[in-house]
Length: 501
View 1 (spheres, rainbow, N blue to C red):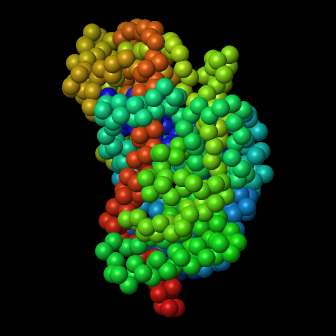
View 2 (cartoon, rainbow, N blue to C red):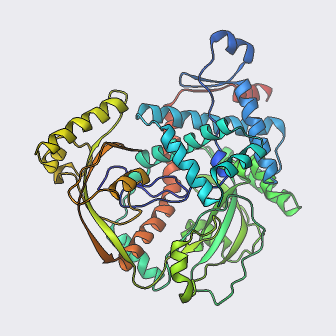
């Protein structure tokens, strides 16, 4: 299989053998402003320094710009903005995390082309049933410039690619894991969820028919983190902090506002919203705590290895199996972004493609031009009679190289879009021009095509995605913690806060 196989929730691209998921809609696609490159020393002196991340400077001016952007987004989503000192620290932590990911992406040679951004914009527009021009008007009316929107979208694509390479590739899901999952689901459809891009009313959906799928629950959290190996006194202090927040909530305080002001969770500035998924797919601690909590209700203080949590049930309800007469239309018509789609039942005839590829990865040493030039040379050799499979064994940097680049039988949606679009244009035996994807540059050769009933395979693929959903969150947080622990981070706001205390 191709290197970098993945299935993140809400990610832009998926690797071979896992498929592609929807882009986040309008507001979500613009969620992570990156600090600009370090200014000249004289400018730093005038502007002031908020933080240093390895060798990258985040200035107070950049922080102020980011605060203004996040404040607009929170106001649009009706999330109370915390007091300025707290808000500034929360936003700066976001910027530090973004800088660490940018630096790691640069180290791994991840570069996002203008063509990839253009394709992403078209996808965002299609998902929101807009033209590109209509999308542009929506972005401009929100107060963001079109150039800044492209910057934000490029960052999102980069983060998805980085997460895939660094986190999701390391998550192993075995056939026995899938078998066990399908046994628990039985004959019910395997659900696919997407977290809503905007806050939704706190009322459960009313089923038109009897529930046929798992119960879906949307949760928000306030996390009070406890440092590793913390002394008992520190643990007690954090517990008291969480209990004080709970008392405020019981007195009528706004959950989203308190999350933005006090939570250490990555979703703090989104009101703590962690998305929607089947109840059983939440961590056991969360699932047990919210089992009997109605929509709009709040749990008590829960303790985990990360610290103390308070959960709010934003919505809960059941997904519905599509009516038989509409099943075919459901497969061909994209569902609204916030609606969980269901796996169709019955025969699923699809065209599979048997393909090979040669992958040349880009890095600091291997540029795009060099990788493309290498593949153009290999393509000429193939045209002069050399074996594609033998050249793949010698030159491909993919795990499929020992098999001559053989990827086996591929289903629609199981490769990244750039790869699949070109593969679908090839005739049997034909070799593509060099193709760029998030993993590098490819030559693709189509061996054959066939039609096959993929009902069972589709169910297994959906099960794999659901299992990945369960595991990717904790794995990503652990990876980000590792980045932070290995980096030099000088957070000037924390110094100021400590001095004031």
